[in-house]
Every structure is written in C-alpha cells, then in structure tokens.
Length: 192
Image (cartoon, rainbow, N blue to C red; front, top):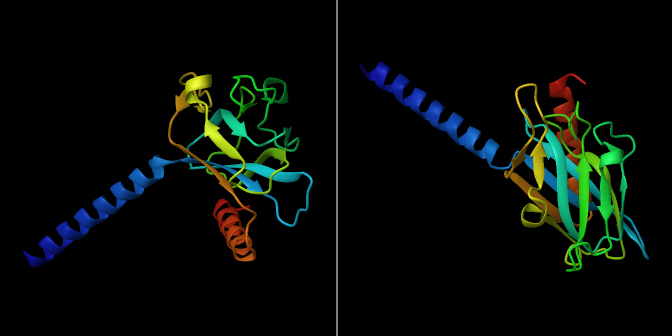
C-alpha cells in the first residue's frame, strides 16, 4: 500500500508540474524586444526589433505603436516578412506623437518559425540611446490587435493577446554570452 501511495503522489506531482509548465508556456508565447545595439555613438542609434516564439506559435502579423523612433528598416534577409504589406508610419497618424509599425508575413508563412529565438525583424533608428525615451506599445485599441496568428489550413488568422513587449538597453557582455549559449542550445536541439 505504501508503494501505491508513493506512486500516486509522484503521479500527482508530475501532473501538477506539467500543468504549471503548460500554464507558464501559454502565458506569453511571443516575446517582442527592441534592443539597443552595443557600442554606438550618436547622433542616431540603432535598436533591433526581435521576436521569439514558443513552439506551435505562428505569428501572421505584428502591429505596434512606437514612440521615440524615427524610422524602421525591415530585415531583407527574413523571408517571413511581406515587404509590400508592411510599413512604418511616422507622421503622427493618430495625433498623439506615436508612430505605427505594421509587419505582415506572406500568406504561406509566419514572421518567424514556431519556437524561434531572437529573430531579427528589422532595425529602428532613434536619436535616443535610453529605454526611458523610446517605447513599444500594444495597438489593441487603435489597430484592433497587436499580434495575429498566421492562418492555418483549418482556419483564418486571429488576434492573440498573450505576448510581451520590452525595450532593453544594450546587452552587457555576460548577457551576450548567455544569449549565445541559449541560441546554441536551441540550435542543437533542432539538429541545426
């Protein structure tokens, strides 16, 4: 009887751990980051816009309100960006000092592969080198959604509300090493 009770407890702990892991994984499967590139001097500073997605998460479009950025150059090497359907509107389109960035994926793909880490979408230029002077904001109220999931054979695209937006200063040397190690570990898992 003692062995069955231990097995039942172990099973309960395992199920609880799986539930917590699944809940945390669905909390924010999309991470969107504007990162100040290291080692720059003014008058303009480059901020890379990057996206990471959880396995099974296919992003069809991204619409952001931004502040403090003058222009945006799309990453031409990213096949997940439909340049004709994407744009950066920086002439105060909603009359409050913010710009709108829209990045769309082609109808047959996603902005980044599912489970991708730190994929470059493009680069902002800004006169500011401080995260206090620039921002990324959701576009729910103005645009109707911030992130839409890519269409699947089973249905159309739909809005997604589980994402994080962050603006971070240039990475410290230790963070660069950690990021490289995580990217290497992810590549090894995928057999790249």
